[in-house]
Image (cartoon, rainbow, N blue to C red; front, top):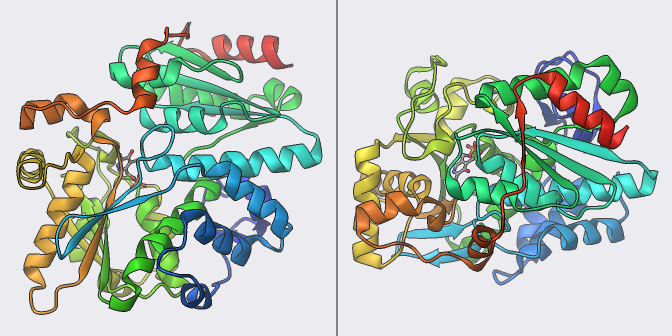
Length: 436
Ligand SMILES: *Cc1c(COP(=O)(O)O)cnc(C)c1O
């Protein structure tokens, strides 16, 4: 896979190189140069194909210039010992549940594939790396779980003390071995600043290989395209009257779907569902992109005021507003509407929706109401397990969603973290002592 920067000032690079770089040197995001055609794969695969079969086909389509087929098969098998689940709610709406992985959120698909790729590369080059992540909650647990036990890789996680939920903290602090968790006396912004400072610190740079695993990494974005193809296959006969509805924040998830479309996945539209942090839906209707500070909502993983992947979306559509607005349909859902949706779906279907998925479901309902003449099949991406947001759900429905085994186990384990001040010096001391 050849990649260029969305800002056009960095040299073309390979997928393997880009994995360890994260951002391109010009500050842009890596973006595939070529377009590959998935249509022969769509014809060949049965509607009952497993997720790993789909993942392997797409990995081979894109990455055979950098890996042998046997390595790609191994990477896919190591990355995914879990699969998305389709759940039909009614004739029109179907959930694609993406919270079946180790941290119970869709970010597991990207993080686990990235981890498996890095492990394979480091083993073949006999090198070690340290992943450094700042987290406000969810990204950290997906990354920690994905890299847990991987050879030649250590993970260092910083999270703001007292500012993540009890459950998130348990998910972050109950691993050991190659996962090192720091509770920073400060805010999420402090954690992010410390990580940024570490990446440019000359002494650290000369003695350690530090790398990031954040959501702009192409190694997390690319595998997210796999589940669009997987979710589409059972509805192949209905194409192109299939619509994906994507609860969005930084728009990585939606961008992966748009990539799949640009490779020939025949879908009618994508619904960009947001909470009141609606800069992209606004752009779709007004052609004006106006980032602004984010507001706090119930669907907090989508509280983003300047989505980082918007640059990639612009690149796909050659900066043409009209082309983007033809494919993407924006819907905005408030917290009150989110609560009502959780309650309604629980009472009508006995299904718990987490607040993010509820935003998607409500957006899908509205889309269908506006397209009654020719209603499509809408596949709503269910992004988090309801048990991760049990307080909100219990408050709204009166019932607590059952806790999955992995989460119950984490809750029973003791917290292991080190409290440190919000300074680079504190982080640096640990890194040099432990790894240099
Ligand atoms: C991260 C996240 C989102 C938003 O995904 P983006 O790729 O940032 O748009 C939605 N729901 C949940 C549960 C998340 O963790």
